[in-house]
Image (cartoon, rainbow, N blue to C red; front, side):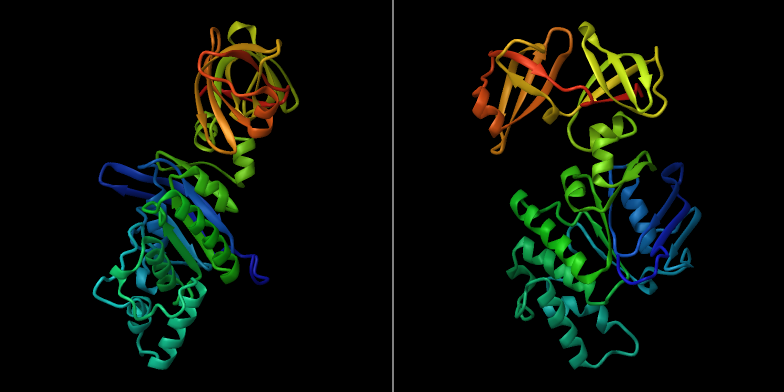
Length: 364
């Protein structure tokens, strides 16, 4: 957080956006804090980009209101908002140099700032994104990662109060995407600007965000810190979208405080945190993360047969099958495998998990 102002930098109040009969965003209520890194996460068509475009001023809400720094901005055009946006494909001008791309917004101001001030601002922006001395380069001479940094420099040179990122790393390879995620986090902390990211990549949202807003069918399903959403999803949709999880149907046997016990297929017991509205006797599902399950050769636990094995470096992912529970995933660490040895497809073993590892959720 930056400064001593605890008032929100932006708000959506009952914001709804319709495109003819299609409701792209429905009654969005969201308070965005100063200096935070917030992500909208969800599949294509869930409304996350529409929410971002309403904040940017590219879309006007059909109902409700958008506030920036305490002022309603429904009718304020995009170019007059203290907001900048980095697009998925960067939207750089290929016929301009790097410096000319970065300074484009500054040169549109009226009255025009002095050339020396513009040049100094461009150089500061280049240094911030670790591209000092690249001002004379042409865009087509830059790599994908460098082009993304140019797009970021162009966005921050205007010193916006809100920086909007519309899947800016979708075109990058995995390693470069990881490197840019770290750079974005560092840049956000350095500048103290509120960043809002739209992504369908759960790992990206989990690794970068202070808070994540999970969206579905134009609505906010759940919002919280990455750890809250991972450890305490409110329903199967969130549990399935934030990280990997195994789901087992069953019947709730008992509920005590925030804990519940469920009996699944083959009378396998699941004990763990009780989700919203879970009650004894009702149909429910247990969500168990793959890393919460151990695979061993010694007797005890649920007998399984290994169906597939994927080596992931620091972990190995096993797809296993039990006659009653069906197929599910186990994520074994290198340390665990050092003790038990590698399992191959066709091998048999036993899957175990501790009491409390499961989440007992309504069967939605």
